[in-house]
Image (cartoon, rainbow, N blue to C red; front, side):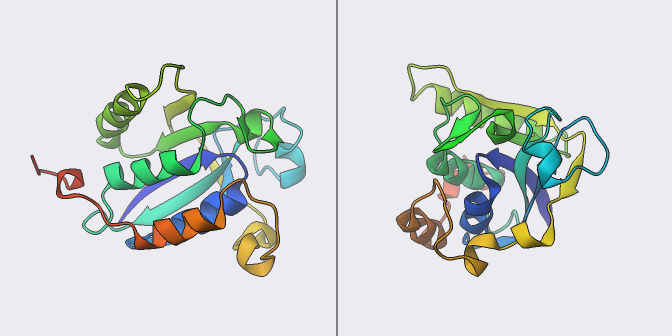
Amino acid sequence: MATIYLAGGCFWGLEKYMASVHGVIDAQSGYANGTIDSPTYGDVSTGRTGFAETVKVDYDPDVAPLPFLLDLFYQAIDPTSLNRQGNDVGTQYRSGIFYTDPADAPIIERSLAQLQARYSQPIAVEAKHLTSYTAAEDYHQDYLDKNPGGYCHITRGLFEEAAKAVPSPSQFPGSP
């Protein structure tokens, strides 16, 4: 198993989206890379703690390699939008990829370079080592399953596409 932390606006939708992917073992909403201990939703929503709403993604890299997960992540966000996804605005809604395994850094950098080549505007997705993570409160976990009509910047059709997605052979480690 491997873990990557993805921030892309409100964590409700991104959690459901990533949980839909074959090879993802668990997706958990939380707060990453902030400046206080034990943040709450109230703390983070002020935009003054440095935390980003983030989804911790535990996955099987033999089934869903990191480049594949990153490609799916990019489909669920506007990678050129700074501190905003959909109607959610603020530093807590910034887009980011946070990692704990240093071996992931070059994979992420290569993926972001490939993404940038597709856009004329600068990419606003930060890539950083994870410095802190706190799971969000229970009521945020599986929120869209508990509240099917809840707001989400990710379309329902994209959830279905994520569930059907299959990595290409080139996305597996060691493949040409």
